[in-house]
Image: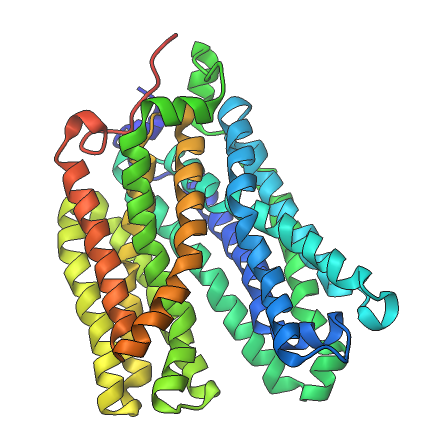
Length: 437
């Protein structure tokens, strides 16, 4: 049996692989998310000055959303070739597809210089970024899980997930630094470009470093046995692994609700509900993101020690309690916002059960495609519906956002419980292997 599915200590090679994968993932998510922190400035620079503010912001965030819409297509295409030609090639390509457009955004001429070509080019760059991010997280989870021993897959996924959320943290810190160092006029004139140029350059460096990574032992074994998937991987996934797809999409809903509401939307929600200053809620967001980044490592190690089912049954209720504590405690006294945000972030480390569940659910010969299709389609659906659902629930109840998160979490936990208790569906045993054909 290959090393990737055995029990052995982590080697220096494993540590190098995990470090480079996590670093690249962090930089790639930084590149994708930094846009939202400077969306207002970008809107003013890339659209006609006489455009109504509401329309300008609508189009600016529409371009941001285009990145999300491109995720499923980009993810499935990258995964297709990842299952047929190798994980490493697509793993390296995804960071190039993110870094280069990010760098280009940083040097793009504005509407004042090239007119409507400016927002058009910005849209094209965001589409490339979206396609790249669609392949990065699934590809990275598959890549690290197939490199490490069976008894360290949870930790590997945890380190990678922590790297991805760490990228969001880097984006928050960079935005805070830019706003601290430069005046609003300087940001408008030139400083908004700095985060994009820095992200693009470091992304290209990370791509170069990924050249030193090796193909996964699992894929090499398939290539040696000549058991690579012969036809369309997606066809195999949809025809033979529908239960795995359903479960993977349901747990992705849980992940989406946690990240979008607790990490991304809560600062704005707290400003609206309690009249808090934006800077205060930004500090709270940083605390929550730091909490989830560190907690993901711990959750991964606990999965390896106690198993997926036990960690899910313990971690799920703990997260729900911390989420309610954040909203109820802040309503009682806004001074509690930052510590409760950090606590909710720690509870949100539960999201690491999601990649572990998905890489276990699919056999090796279609694993990349199965994870990528399920994750990206679910994220596109629920990522779009979650903000709408939260706003509608908020009208009826100030705790509406946390009710939504709790509901999605319960559904995710239920999916893992049902699937884990059915060994024939793949989650109770070791990483499934493709049949020799």
